[in-house]
Figure: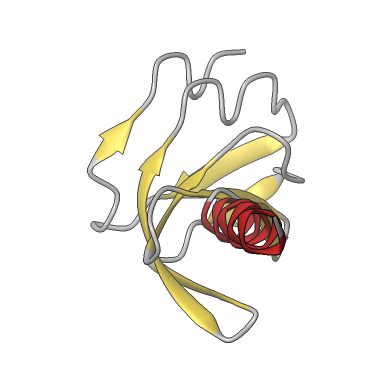
Length: 97
């Protein structure tokens, strides 16, 4: 029984680390693998926003590879955005106002 509980605990911990949302410098990210992230809705997007090609969170470095659906929806205070070459996909309605 203890082995089953331990296995379930390890699985849930690994899943929570893998599929995490976090914010760095006002940009909200979602982990898409152990080394990549996507920009998601929920950040403080205003003014001239620069998306970095890499972001560090808790001593782990992630490559920014995508912008998910609706990420910047209704960001009326956003005047410009710089997207790095590492971003290879932009979701539906990402910049919809």
